[in-house]
Amino acid sequence: MVRMLLVIITIHYSLFTMAQISVEAQIDSIQILVGQQAHVTLTAIAKENAKVEFPQFQPTQMITPGVEVLSCTPLEDQAKDNGFVSRQMVYTLTSFDDTLYYLPPMTVKIDGKAYKSKSLALKVLTFEVDTTNVDQFFGPKDVQDNPFLWSDWSSAFWLSVLLLVLLAVTYYLYLRMRDNKPIITHIRIVKRLLPHQKAMQQIEQIKAEKMVTSEDSKEYYTRLTDTIRKYIEERYGFNAMEMTSSEIIAKLTAVQDESALSELRHLFLTADLVKFAKYSTLINENDANLVNAIEFINQTKLENQPVEEQVKPELSEEDQRSQKARRILKTVITVISVVSLLLFVYVVYSLYLLLI
Image 1: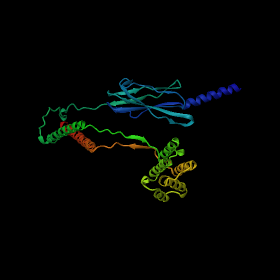
Image 2: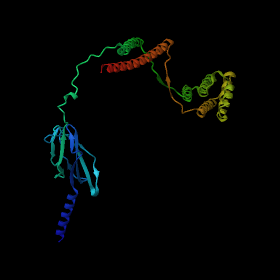
Image 3: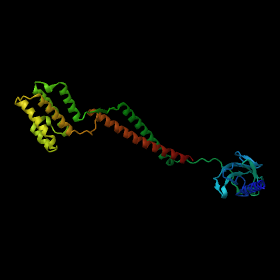
């Protein structure tokens, strides 16, 4: 009983599916004039995942004797109910013989099974020519000579002459520019040390030469204060090398925290006593002043500064004049070239209008 029920369900499903599958053919015009075109739309309705194969024709292939297929154009699928889609192929037909044609059914394969459309008809008409009144048609004309008018050609002629002159001037200027060799300058990227880096290098050099323990305190303090002065000059932008210690301190007081200057005052005071009053210092005092110098640099340094700079070579006046002349020549050549191109297009178009 169960097996019979399954068979009945299977048969019913197959019949239902077959009832949904269909192939139809429609023609947009049942009659055309000789050489005109008609379009046959072949529609196949099948499951979305079904394999549909439409008949294919090569250009000028006959679908029936006397009717040619010009092209086969597929259209986009259209969704239907219950998982079915409509697929279409448009066939463009033409004919050059006036008669009534029978278009046979077209076969579409769906999942390997052939389905045929209905047959169609196409009537091809021709023009009726009244051969009894041939005088109403005009025969071929002889070749006629058009009169030459200088006024029609004068503008194109003189513009052509102007175009040749501009081309000659452009070539002459090009030769001048070619002889005037370009001046090539190279921009160098130079890495530079920041002011505090330079100062620390000088201090490390002083330490390496063991000047802290040297008996010549004057040379030690001279080099140490010169290092600080150069650092201040590059860091704050005033000429500290030509200023006294008190002037430097007064200048820094306006822009710097007092806490960073207290030890610097002591360093400059000790240096002035050594250089001008022949004051003798102890080794630990020299060490303390060296530490003070390093501490001042660390408290006032600016680290987030560019460490590379572009170095552009300076050109002589003659080179600058040469570069300027070369730029002018390039500009003039470009302008003349654009004008020449526009003139050429206009002359060619004018000649075309005169010759057609």
